[in-house]
Image (cartoon, rainbow, N blue to C red):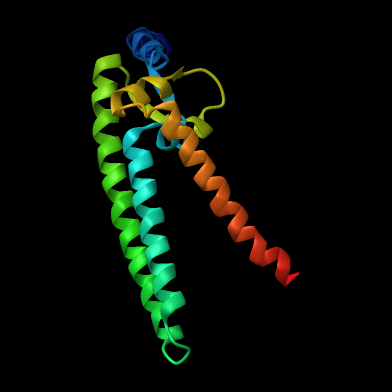
Length: 163
């Protein structure tokens, strides 16, 4: 009789648990390509421009410094740039998180994760997020790409000449 009771309890538990387990597989997951969002939205491009402008400003300060104070100016410029870029990155993250939270509600998603974390399945909501955040014009995107390429080639030149 004891075995029969255990079997009944186990069977009843499984009957109650199966619908709950079945519901676990029905998660609605979205994913975004954060780099594409940052490089395709007005906010992302604006913040990138601000950071690049600050970098140029600080490079000019370093270049104008005399030899005696150069190391101190370099150190101050690095600290100022780090603080500025961290503040701008935080501003962008907060804005993006707000837009993601709204998109989760609109699309009735359970969660939105980074594209790189997805092995299979899920719904790509990158373009939806770009549109929600304000898609930059194609001309602005192209200009930002050209500027990034110019900066990358300038950074590569000193390394090539040093070798």
